[in-house]
Image 1 (cartoon, rainbow, N blue to C red):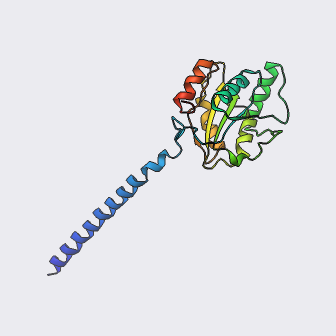
Image 2: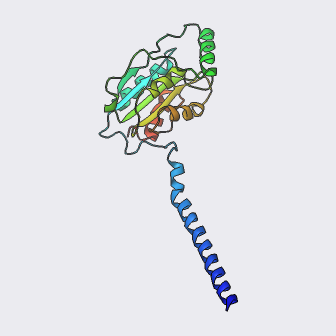
Image 3: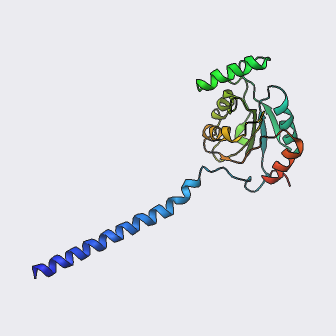
Length: 203
């Protein structure tokens, strides 16, 4: 009799363990999509129809300015120049030396100006030159100064050859809560126009 009771108890315990294992697997499966929450999107969800759009940019040599103005023209966005509190030198070597020091220190240099009523914008394009594989560090200061929760952020850059991918992860961290969309690292007008169509910013 005791033997029978022990067999029943053992069988019941085994069933409970299997049930718990299945439950944990189910929970893991249900939670799996959350891993994609921080993924960079290929397109702007729903395009720009009915949305308020801003192009915010910094340009050292004028190349990024040209791209920013093209995006403004093609999307009808507002435009904003992100101005560093301390301007970068006009000499390229001096400029990149300062940029490297700021990057190595993970500095957050001050921004001299602010966007009026950032809350009104649904989509924000953010443009910058690539220095040492990243955006100038004060661009991250800019991104960290606003609440991007629920907004869409679309980076773009001009570069001597380094792709935008190296700066996307930093932009994603700084614009916390935003949905990032695949950026552009081209200064060619035709390529920029194609990119805007590809991400559904224009038709």
